[in-house]
Length: 176
Image 1 (cartoon, helix red, strand yellow):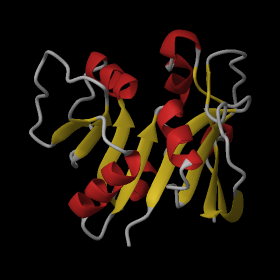
Image 2 (cartoon, rainbow, N blue to C red):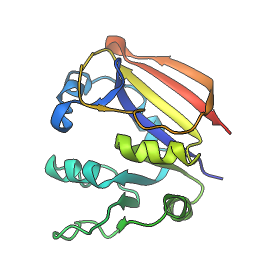
Image 3 (cartoon, rainbow, N blue to C red):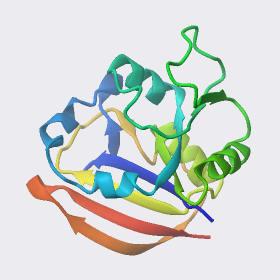
Image 4 (cartoon, rainbow, N blue to C red):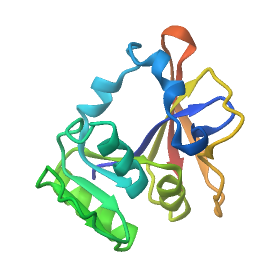
């Protein structure tokens, strides 16, 4: 069965975004090869939250990931998505994951974010693998990745990868 993978960058102090959804701290590392192409070749569908979707639209990244996209949202945006494979849903996340797995075929599903989406999937035991890319910065404030977890889970370290400029990627399997 395809895995549900939380693949996300995180600051050393645990943030996925700075204040006001600031992602500028990632800019200095955009040219570092941190294994994204190899990771994305495994992906057949993406699940993300509405804020993440809106940030992607604002930055012109709407076509950056050419696989089916499921956006968790209570409402549909006024502007129709430019892609036919974008689905807005407020359904149960386990059902959304099942639909994404069906669309993904033999490939994995990327739980892209943001933090609220990641927390929902972790709290429901729906994440199979964590791929956390640690970025060597302290943000001090912003959106923490693991702020609202309500379950105890164990993880098994599968790999540690070092990249240029101090980036480190931790790969964990989530145990039930």
